[in-house]
Length: 47
Image (cartoon, rainbow, N blue to C red; front, side, top):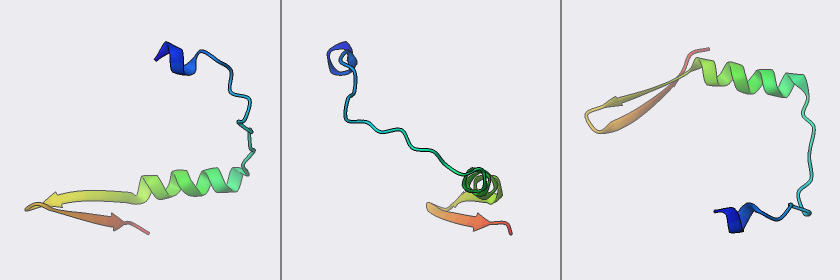
């Protein structure tokens, strides 16, 4: 692993995000529930 990550990444570009986008993703992840029932996965978004 050291050989892979030892050189600095020159092709990476940092991006900035808006506070609204971060809040949207956090709120979505808080409202999302995933249930496993009899081998099936059910995703439920609590709006």
